[in-house]
Amino acid sequence: MTLRELNKKEFLLKAGHVCRHVYFIEQGLLRSFYLKRNTEVCSAFMKEQDLIVSLESFHTRTASHEFIQALEDSRLWCISYEDLYYIYRTYPEFNWTGRELLQNYYRLTAKQLFGLRMQQATEKYAWLQEHYPEFLLRIPAKYLASWIGMSEVMLSKVKGQRIS
Image 1 (cartoon, helix red, strand yellow):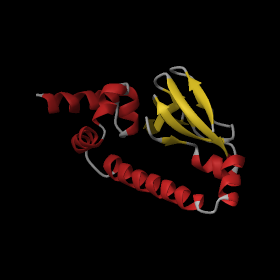
Image 2 (cartoon, helix red, strand yellow; image 1 turned 90 degrees about the vertical axis):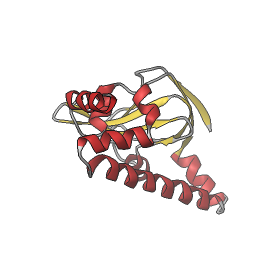
Image 3 (spheres, helix red, strand yellow; image 1 turned 180 degrees about the horizontal axis):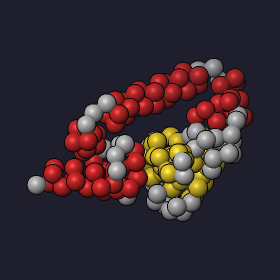
Image 4 (cartoon, helix red, strand yellow; image 1 turned 30 degrees about the vertical axis):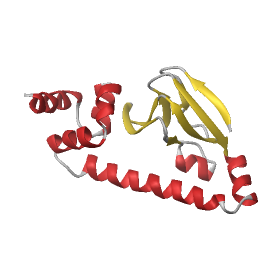
């Protein structure tokens, strides 16, 4: 594994490029997003102790449709596709670890999809407060609003209702 440091707002990956590494976040916060009619749509936030990767690009070795950007100065440890698969071939027991990590992130994605897409605005905000309270402090409202599928104005209104 090699160390990679990113400054706030620096890109780890840009759309159209192949994601060649999986990154473990030692310190910092990153977001994944894609463009829809020239509007940024946030698809994920990852923080300390998480992995971040453009999964489809990494595994298919094709150009990514998403961007990955640091929201804070970040310190990441990365492993290349080639090195990871060398480890899988050489140490078969590591395949179990890889499978467990992948299952964990599938569960996380399913949980987030339900929490963010299957509820009304006030329920989404309550879900965010319950499951990701640190995001409310660390992530700009425009990105949070995009992630939970509402406008920044609606997020502000819902937040105001919850405080009152």
